[in-house]
Length: 55
Image 1 (cartoon, rainbow, N blue to C red):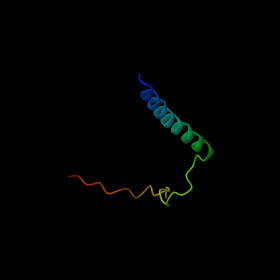
Image 2: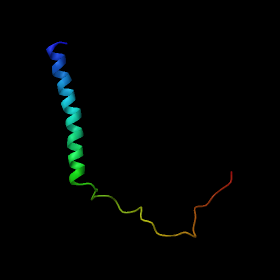
Image 3: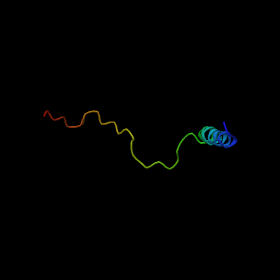
Image 4: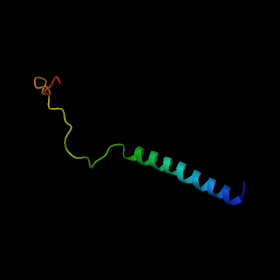
C-alpha cells in the first residue's frame, strides 16, 4: 500500500471509531432526551378501541 492509502485508511478509521466513542460518551452522560414533544402518554382507555373495518 502506498503511504497516501495508509494515511486515508487511518483517517477513515479515526473518523468512524472516534464518532462511535464520542456518541457512546455522550449517551453515557445524557441518556434521556430533554427536548421531546408532548404525547405518547398512556391515557388508560381500555374500553375504547380503534375502529376495525372488515374490507
